[in-house]
Length: 246
Image (cartoon, rainbow, N blue to C red):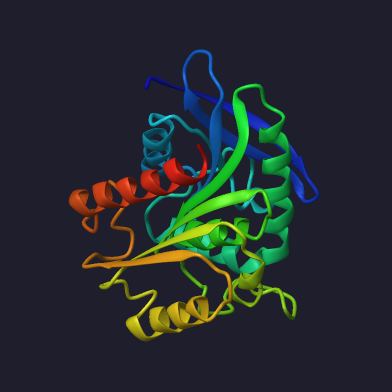
């Protein structure tokens, strides 16, 4: 499908959240995917990934995840300065603020004439964690988390009982968890802890995939990009959403 893109500036309790919308061109109604970026916000690789999903018949929303902490339209570079700023933003934003962001996204997209009202979530790196967080919303039917960082840590500020893994029993939709075995940010023993916790959660439906890939193997820039694994990742996500959102 040919894809069209536009911008929506959404009101949230913590300020205006710029959201980039990528969806099939022309008439039609499509399921929505809330697509969460890395700490760098909507870079070229994130925009291209969102458009890949949109081209398969989805309305894909990419919010600026740190909208409270940066001027509208901020994109951080894949360099030391961008990484330092993104990590500082991650450490400054309370996890509860993502909940209000998610509610704003869902309320808005369900009102759009081009949306069926069915909602999923997807994300890379911290975006994988934020997609997991979005899965706490009852409207989210399926979520694809790619190498979700900080599920096993308390790096993202949170109040008692508010850590994402502590609330996993609230997830009603299906989860797809994808990891790289050579990812130093989420070592094997920590992945095992996350798997054990998910597996012991009564009623939680999830699939789990570990590949011989590095952190950010989906990002189509840089030396860690693995095109074959990326294609597999897209196919798994599309299979998930095709079963659950249509």
